[in-house]
Length: 132
Image 1 (cartoon, one colour):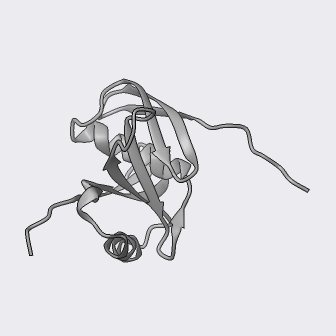
Image 2 (cartoon, rainbow, N blue to C red):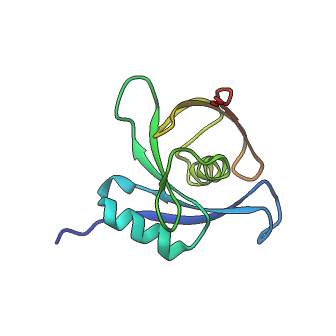
Image 3 (cartoon, rainbow, N blue to C red):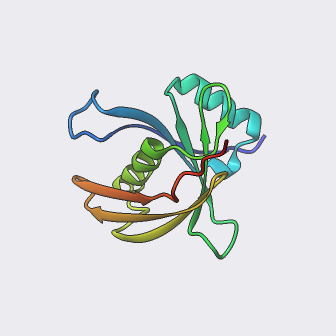
């Protein structure tokens, strides 16, 4: 089997103090993983949610993200999105500006500001839909 490499992070969103906030796993380079491996990593990390970062799959977005709980795939997770862009800033794979992120729930606009040491991430979500 060929060697494959991913980067795995645990990031506490919504805080500047370690071991507080809302933890999420972040996996960079997830395009080398199978669905079963992705789910196994999410289960092993045991966070409520883990973001798996993939390259763009079309012209309407800049990157593709899959979100997994330890048990199943989720459509979108806000705190894992914030954690993901924090990790991308930390490793130099993101810079301040506008990004379009695709997930199972659609394409979301994200504004990245600040620095790796002081990130500020804002996600624009569509209004909720209610049904009777």
